[in-house]
Length: 255
Image (cartoon, rainbow, N blue to C red; front, side, top):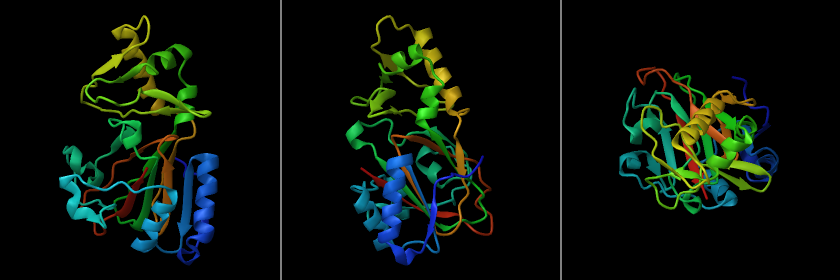
């Protein structure tokens, strides 16, 4: 996949100044900020970037605590090899299916931004995949969108519908569950199971065949901010963790 066309070079010493101003401008225009820093930001500046964008969400999952710094910075080390353990998939070499972050939570509990920064690209070779939600929506017909605006996960009370509007943009709250079953409820008039399943199937197909998809090839100091209301994201498969150098990204989730 092509790399994102958005982005600019900067020195870590330019933070906040040029770095923050450029990110905020690109997030407003494109829903994506990409900065090619000469070196990674230190943790205190990385947290300050998160604070400038919103409020960092604490990392509370028991399975990831050994990877957490300062309560909110998650060190994504590709050291878990191949695993089907969902809690360890951010650290695995498996591909990660396309999703919006926190799709099983209420809108208030979903992150607005995902901030990723590369400390060590390693030998893993996995790329972060970005798919614009507006392009996905453009590939669905009006009836599919009508049904999905009234469809939500059945087993997660308080979650938003699969499709909703935010200003001029179509927002999806959805993930590709792959082999796991998705239980849904739909309140659309005249909705049938076949019609809703068909709409969900066409949504999944469009997610993986949308125009404008890009792949982030990580290098040391590269910083990417993803608007979770404008992009799906995922990950290609990487090499097993036995590689000589382990990929290391830092992550913040921002409300």
